[in-house]
Amino acid sequence: MSKIRRGNYVFLTWKGDHSRKHVHVYRNGELVLKWDLEHKMAMKGKLNKRLLGLIQQLEEEGLL
Image (cartoon, rainbow, N blue to C red; front, side, top):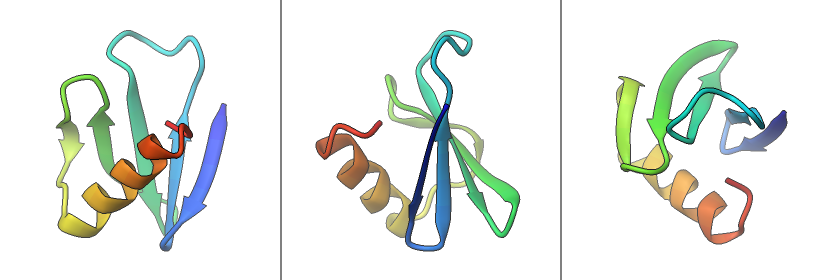
């Protein structure tokens, strides 16, 4: 499991999780977004500009 804290959000990924590489995003302990990293789309929840920027930043850093 990978756990990254950024901008009041917690980003979680699991090695060997089910297919379609994705990240779970939590804020204050609540799931706010499940993001499909391969297809760049929300699987659950809603994306906002702030989250999109953080996800892009983490991908550029090789953390997602």
